[in-house]
Length: 194
Image (cartoon, rainbow, N blue to C red; front, side, top):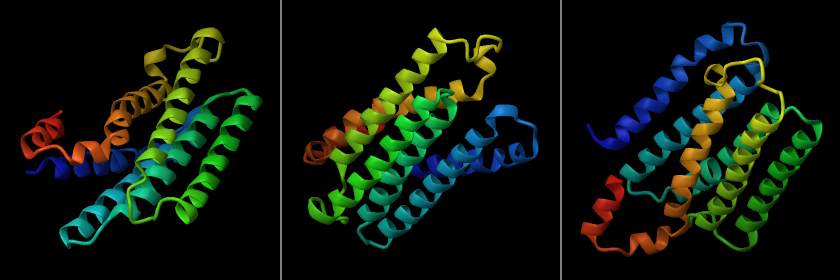
């Protein structure tokens, strides 16, 4: 089975296995769960439809630009605004998400066509997400938000950790994507393995 099929399968399984959580008492994690579920649905749609277009020989950059570069970044910034308890932090992150959405529209209309992958926009979004994750960990260490809870039992901790790991690793890859594409086939295969 191809690696991309496993990736799609794992996203779909994560989405399906989280459906029962809608019927459980998650206390303060219910709103965060809805946003994470929305992210999983969005990623599933983008990956399946993007893969379908690629198999048909149709350019799928617009799907990834709308869904992955802009949509997922805005949802993650919204999620971070939900898990941070300070009203000031919520406003800052919501305004940041809104400004990134406005940047997406302006960038698409005036600078980068929608059918070309917006790797620099993804870099900006990744930096915003990484900074938001660092701030979340700063709040966890300096404030008493999760003082009474065991950190390994807090879903927000694991979700934000995953966001930090994914975006810190993939940011460099997508920043230099067009340079990577120009590599010869042997180097490309090694890089994809990583």
